[in-house]
Length: 465
Image (cartoon, rainbow, N blue to C red):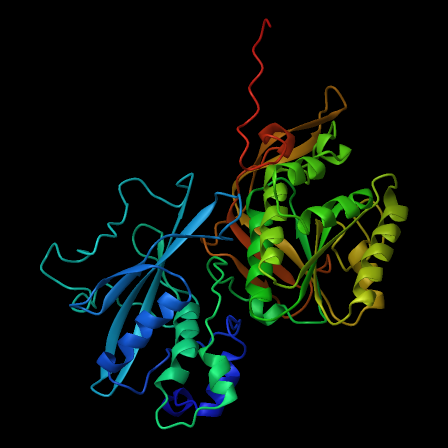
């Protein structure tokens, strides 16, 4: 095992790749530096300075913590913020390693449990006279992607970040190597994009040339964030991604224009002028979370990352004719750019790859038709913890659609986003699940200031006026 950790100089250059690349592949073992801790630590400081993550340092114990950095930083979406605590650890007198703990907070404090707030002052752990170095028993994290959550439910050891730092600074720690063009590239200042905590299983399921169908429950805050995080983590690792959204095809040009814009007030108004956002039966696809996701994808594109979006719904059609039209639109996009990874999101009937529905055994969903014409199609059904969603359901008394916040029953599998594939598809043709944790409803964007995250909520109507 230890021999695997002693990477050669050439292997390191390949691992680092172009400056700023955030490798998606994370080994399930710790990164060990073949240098003493005191020799390694100055390069750690230099790395966080270069990637523009300001920090404060407790020099006496070789611990630093970064300032809060917004997920999809620079966007108008005030959602989640992250910071890192970095602790230098002595493996042996001549070897060292880093522990990096990611802390997440949100503006609505959804991740914070009452009475469990963390004190992130530089005196952490000092109440009993112990330094973070001495407090190893309490912070004895297991190795692997399934990181240990501290008691607040916020703090997580981030093995992905540990390896990102390792790949970033090891070329500078390599001794007695001639200066080459490759080394000059490795020394270039990287760009760090905050994509949130790594999604477990994503790297195993997503690859260039593949098509992944995500069958969702419309109207949650979590699915659009899951999509944005997935795209961010893929494109920063060098995988070009095209996202397919179940929105009317008439919106294609409008959405493309927005993604290529500066995201200003006029750009938002042009995006939201489409009648789709003002549907009398808003089923969750025109939610504030979806509008925010488009802003997050726009922000990734603004950083020069390879993100594309298309829409493929044909709402004027129904039944099998609609499925056929959905299929042809998606198929045309995939065949036009077969080298890209296509992430296609839809309601969880369209994404099934098995023929038949309970009320029609001859029904051929879009997933079934795509699988028949493409070599690499994976369908994942949505899994989630119970919560709420904005849902349109038939009202038995009025026989009309009733749209609003409704309970959504699921199963608790923790807070961490993940993808999981089974050994074989289920009866609906799903190959596995993608899990988004506890779900919360996202209201129509039109009720939230035309979907503009900077705009205040629309005033509530007052009876009698």
